Image (spheres, rainbow, N blue to C red):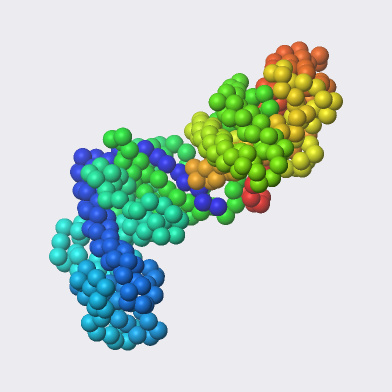
Amino acid sequence: MMKSYKYRIYPGKSEEGKLENTLSMCRHLYNWSLRERNNNYQLWKQAKTIEKSINVEVDKKVIFSSPMGQFFYKRGNEAISVKTLTRIEGILGIMFSSTWENVPRNINYNYQQDNLSSLKEERPWFKSVHSQVLQDVLGRVDEAYEGFYNEGKGYPKYKKKGQYSSITYPQNIKFPKEDEKTPGKYKINVSKIGETKIVYHRHMPKVATIKTLTIEKDGGKWFACFSCELKHTHIEPEQDLSKSIGIDMGLIDFYYGSDGSHVEVPKYLRKSEKKLQNLQRRFNNEEKRTKRWYKLLKSLQKVHYKVRSQREDFLHKEANRLLKDFDIIIYEDLNIQGLKRRPKPKQDEGGKYLPNGASAKSGLNKSISDVSWGKFFEILKYKALVRGRTLKAIDPKYTSQICSQCGSMVEKSLSMRTHICPVCGLIIPRDYNSALYIKRLGLESLSKVTQEAPAIS
Ligand SMILES: [Zn+2]
């Protein structure tokens, strides 16, 4: 798996000047490459509009224009060139044709990369930037276009001053080095920039392979981000165990944290969800394909969309908050027991009512929580991977019954909202106790894992 490590760096005056210069040149290269590709794209768009009149198929993958403004269609093995498309306007503007092999190359990543050396000849100051850093700039342009073509993302934008804030080295990156004269102080050597001090507070594991180094400017501060590949995920001795949290998912609170924090599902979301339930019920009872049925269907889709986006906003916000404050997040694996035994509803079988008046047995309530929890962990897992955090799932068995302090079994029904341990005397909210116990279980099992152990999911 990939893991990233971010450190504050303190470049000296001369190094900072070089970094600023590099960022500025990279921004220019980015915009320049973007313009070149944009011209190509504009031609393609024009071609699309006259596609029918010239009766050849235009595909963005096989549309090519040379830097000279020639523009080609592919038809079989034949290449058809059309000069200055704007002049065509309905007239077949075929100027000449040749075989496909003779066609100048498309303006894509490879084309632009090949042109880097002539760029350096024309503008010698680009020689002061590491060639791989320049290639990475072209890669970013390419990625922006790929996102636009294939992932439905917006059209790539030019970068204004200050909007290009990082450079990436994709090869031959070394670990930070300890300063021989002042032990405990570390430095990194950034190619073409020079040596800079780094606050190496949490060491990268020795088994890690550094894939890329990104130097980033954020809010006037400089950072070095190392992206590493780890063969196995493991808890590192350097990892700060105090930065861990256990979370107990619930119906009353969305979750209760072992740090004592608890997060409710926001009222506006509950309200929209309630509205959705009511609408759904009315819709189900309506006779199909009547005027009213279509009307309800329309509002159902609308509310459904609203609930979904409100819910996702909430889940993203909560996931970000947890990952910002904690290195290790421990939770109950809701899939271990399958759908029969959810962490809280398992005790609802007696049909007890929750203090907030909602019936815990209500299938609808459960299904909403299921959706949210499932989605929440999906988001959390993805973000944890990107940010190099550890997630640990534990078996949810007895988490609400066992005392987090002494380990005694303290049975309680769902209506009992306080954990009162007759053995050690611990008295805390029920869900808080669960969260603490979840954290305890997680840390115990994490500390057993060695570097040789298989990956933790
Ligand atoms: Zn106890």
